[in-house]
Amino acid sequence: MSILENSIIVLHQILIMFLLMVVGYILFKTGIFDNHTTTHLSTLLNTIVIPCCVLASFNRDFDPALAGTLGLTMLSACGVFVVSIALSNALYRKGHPENYRDCRMCAVFSNNGFMSLPLLSAMFGETGVFLGSAHIVVMAVVLWTYGVMQVNRDYRFSPMRILLNPGIIAAVLGMLLFLSPVNLPTDVASALTHITNLNTPLAMLVLGGYLAQTNLASCFTEARIWRVGAVRLLIIPALTMALLYFMPLDNTAKLTLLVGTSAPTAIASAMFAQMYGSDYLYSTKVVALTTILSLFTLPAVIAAMSLLLA
Image (tube, rainbow, N blue to C red; front, side, top):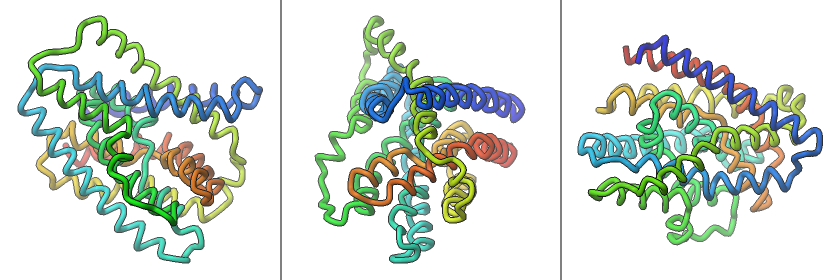
């Protein structure tokens, strides 16, 4: 796929996603959505829809080359998170700023399910979602270890909490399915397809609802939010581009991983902050600002990487 074709697909998809977010924003402002609605829809997405997207992408005949690419993509994702964590720990040290833990969360974790999967599906079809699952799986592990450690002062490592994550379960089941000589029955595969088709509209409606709960004016006027946003949307993607350039991956895998890394701050950053009594209002503002700015930065980052690879 040419650079121009990629750019056109990304711009069209971003426009569609933006329009859906506007609908979610209006639904919340008019009272059709409320806090409970966005919370329940977010739970539905994280526990059912996104895992089904991952599982459905593995419902294909085994391909040794593709399996090798998935493994390398997963290793590359680990490298990206190591770099991201090292950078955020260096930038946001204990007490500088006071909410340094929330800054780390907002910088490291991207909205790779809500924002990335719709883009990957539009750009590369099921193969994009298949390879994109590598970033989702690695992030799930990092989120429930490093992430929880940041916001929960009484953190205790729990392997079962990681293993029982819906995204991890879907990836393990999907890998077993991919390695087996059989595919899912037609009716089951069709049902999965219908569920996966919910991902883009539901995710964007939820994001619109989250934006409606935020004082957008304050998001654009607080310098500390812009600084973290720059790390999430520009610096980490730039470092990722440099790292991926030297990785032995094909261009599709490189772009897939870059899309996952360049997405705005994960809603989980705000959800975990609220869950463990951290500064969730700050995290929510970062989510809001980076989500809006990503409508411009994501196409730019993808175009830059496409030019670099060309």
